[in-house]
Image (cartoon, rainbow, N blue to C red):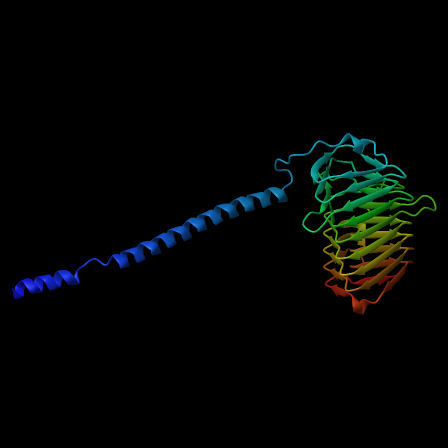
Length: 315
């Protein structure tokens, strides 16, 4: 009897704990769910990275929307909705007419193609849904936005890249992204806000060339990696420019003078908290070169860093 009791006690000690098994099973289930979620997130990340790469390389199978025929003959005020468009003809905005590019509009221009405006042009983007004007082939580039006498432009959350400018007044190309040219008393004007100019180039004014026009560069704009013979980002010739605050001029280059800005007989006012960094010119005026112009700037209220060979050179 005693032996039987011992055996019975031993069996009792070895009884299966089903509560413990359920606990272990639940733990395994939680771990399995975690692994499944990790795999799902990794797959999603891979897709997003692929989409990002495709966005960074515009040549990857872009699906263009059919370009509206109205762009060939703009009458009145014409608005274009979000979409990706390949532009292979010069867009003309006549005097008294207007072209409005709404948030998310992207123009990919063919070589030697751009916009000529005698009326009103608006790039009305918004944060996360900018208006883009760029080249179908960045090696070929595109012309620019040409604002003629009396034209008016408003840029808000716009991006201009890979512009090559157009011949103006001589065979030299001017205004890689934007050209203001006045031939009478009707000055062209442009207002720029929350916009970016990058990888544009020309003989004069890598991003913008201004001949007798009026430019207002408001806030939070960036001019980066633009280049020219003079005025890597901006070349001002007998005109006016106001630069308000929190604008950045960075890594612009001039083969001659004025790494970021070149002034010739024009007036320019630079307010405060603007940054000029890593701009360069071969001869002088790493950031700004002023030749017989009027430069109104309080250098202590703006930031100048690592511009070569100097920050400001005036004659």
